[in-house]
Image 1 (cartoon, rainbow, N blue to C red):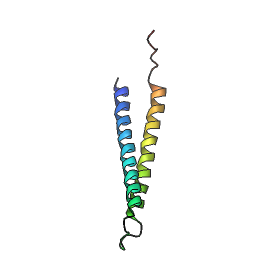
Image 2 (tube, one colour):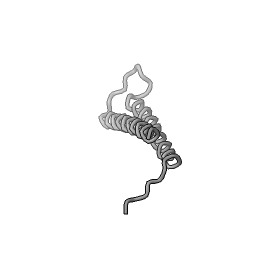
Image 3 (cartoon, rainbow, N blue to C red):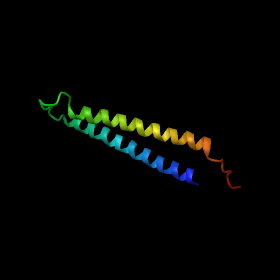
Image 4 (cartoon, rainbow, N blue to C red):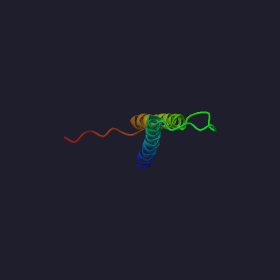
Length: 83
């Protein structure tokens, strides 16, 4: 049971990272659509920075969810469906 609980918690963390990444991507798209003026201090527009961070976080969340899914398939016993 400890394995199932640990995988459930890791899945929750993966989903959280995935949703944070999607939020960053949404912020980047929103800022890009508003055409926020680029300051002379930063070489890249702020929405590009949010987009890159969002893509990395989203990818990390997907990888975590895939690893948990594969791990569950190999380690947890199959439960037959109820008749």
